[in-house]
Length: 277
Image 1 (cartoon, rainbow, N blue to C red):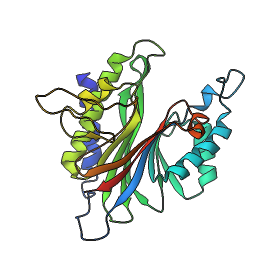
Image 2 (cartoon, rainbow, N blue to C red):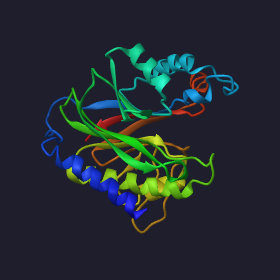
Image 3 (cartoon, rainbow, N blue to C red):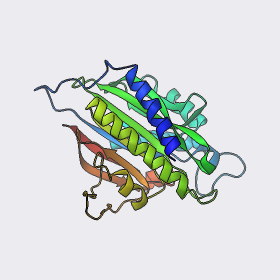
Image 4 (cartoon, rainbow, N blue to C red):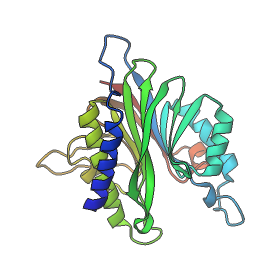
């Protein structure tokens, strides 16, 4: 685990070092900078398309149309997407035109992506962080720097999907991934002094919240606490998460399990209103 964490943080340091001039714009007396962030496991196309599709769900093209309706209804400005497979990625870009942009974990792997409204944010920089997935195999999770078109401040968003136990006990790999993600958000916060967010399907509840927040850098969209020297008190939540650092305040947290969402995916859609400090 130490080797993987060290490699991920070295890659991050190299990425930040080559873009040292990029940072958060100074705070000003302008309008408050507020937006909606979400995390959305869209249920991959390979679960529903073809002869052996999952019972109770329509094919991915139909569900992607519903997913777009969910994003509009929730007034989402930036979203971490999991299981966002190539057919869904292609259909999304075809449907939204230039109104949204997407950054993927890798050119060959769109499963973990970050999307944002182009009338709200502009792309600044992006890279990927290697984390262990099923059986320890590496997958690449995206990180983007986005410049707010309201305040000119830069925010950073990382999106991830940690492995479930569907292919054997993956607790070891989730622990290693959590340590990497904790390290990335810590380094970004300390080097950039900018709002940092983590979205994702972590496939863990307390087992993610407690170690991820133990260094005091990130807090959950839905509360909970992890004081130094005190007991960890995770919020009542599922396996889908949104976290932010000290430069962001969350309000109006939502866990949407409405009929529209249930017809789209096997996860709730979580979101929160953000105000930048």
